[in-house]
Length: 66
Image 1 (tube, rainbow, N blue to C red):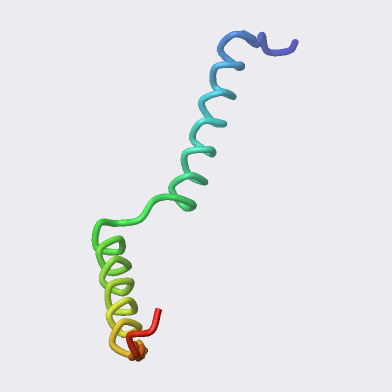
Image 2: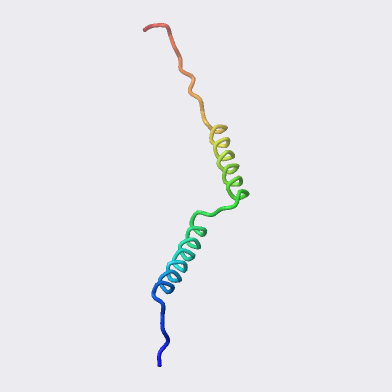
């Protein structure tokens, strides 16, 4: 004799497992801690400051003749 399967319960269990798998992949893809986000922001600020400090400014000469 075989076991009786309730399709509604099996479908719900399958859907729950799919949601758990999708959540795990999203956590890996998008989930970052606050400390990681803060470290990235500080790194971007440091890079911007380094570039601004190395920028050469042109001194334009204006002789008055327009």
